[in-house]
Amino acid sequence: MVTGPSPVVGVLAVQGDVREHLSALTAAGATARPVRRPSELDDLHGLVIPGGESTTIDRLARIFELHEPIRDLIADGLPVYGSCAGMIQLADQIVDGHADQQTFGGIDMTVRRNAFGRQVDSFEVDLPVIGIEDADRPFPAVFIRAPLVERAGPRVQVLAEVDGAAVAVRQGNLLATSFHPEMTPDRRVHALFVQMVRASF
Ligand code: GLN
Image (cartoon, rainbow, N blue to C red; front, side, top):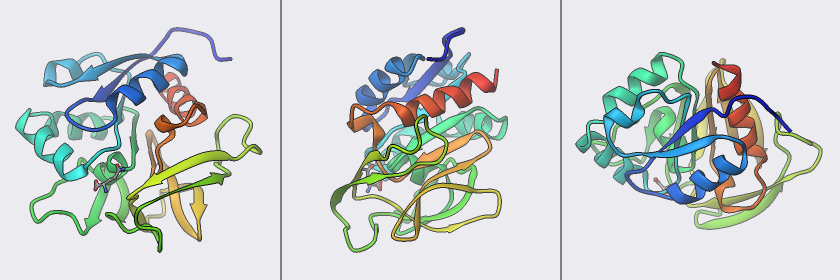
């Protein structure tokens, strides 16, 4: 059990499974709060981009003028975690996005939307994940129309794979999973992120 000050972690709350991330972060020891406007990005120690629909998250983030400030925070080294649609939004390049879809970027990888292997819809698999507590015990990973990491650059550390494809990656203070740890009671991925956040301030 980690002790010490509780880091403040925002969850981008324009669309997607915000509530699930807020409760997972709270259970992992963070002070979690939704972010809907630029001023709510002030004083965060970390940020989560939830699962949902990346095209909608992108569109609304731009309408609410959150896109540029989030890009800047990523460039400044803020720890950010993205699950599923959030992984797409952290990718430097995407394939099969909408014509005008933009990402926040930050992770040197190319991600294809809605393309995970043969199982395009959804599936669950017990997965070993590097870096989580008790890493010998597999993590119950839920995939829903998950993104496929087609290319990961040299600075990207692969934390988990399915059928030879990366499904959990880390680059510096950025963490991304194709799956949805917020949808299962296992809190070890959120705990890993909260640990990254604690280490950064
Ligand atoms: N298919 C979705 C997308 O593009 C991601 C799915 C998810 O987050 N479960 O954005």
